[in-house]
Length: 163
Image (cartoon, rainbow, N blue to C red; front, side, top):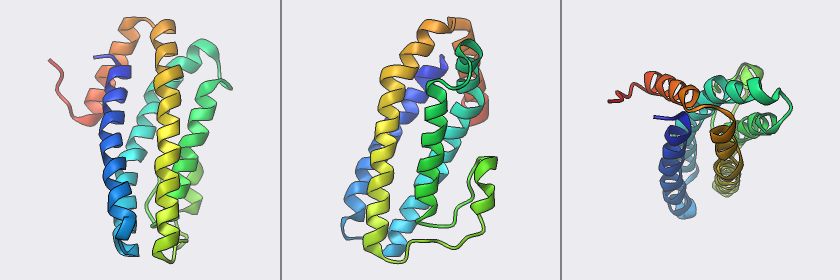
């Protein structure tokens, strides 16, 4: 399986989570919203790591740094920062580890709702860029073997057996 297909499949799962979160936070208390944020972070952070460590370097090997992957990396960091406002979760990137010790910044449910809505919107916009620009670009510039090797790495890291 190509990594682009694997990452796209993960996006599909996230879209279902986003729909659930948007409905659930409407009348949820702060603790529930923070729990939903922590759950989302537990899934989004490894997804971003997979892109940052496996997928993006292959693209950067072809076009260099400073292209669309730079924007994608910055958006990953932005989404993680917004999620950290909800609860004190441990981020996945070395560049954000200095902020891990701070206390949660969100103190009321209304503020937490706004943060969650911002996170969902930012993630949806980010995914749209990947799906409409980055994934097709990767399919054109990288050969099928490279995409499949990265897909195998995805499967290994996710503990998925590919037939």
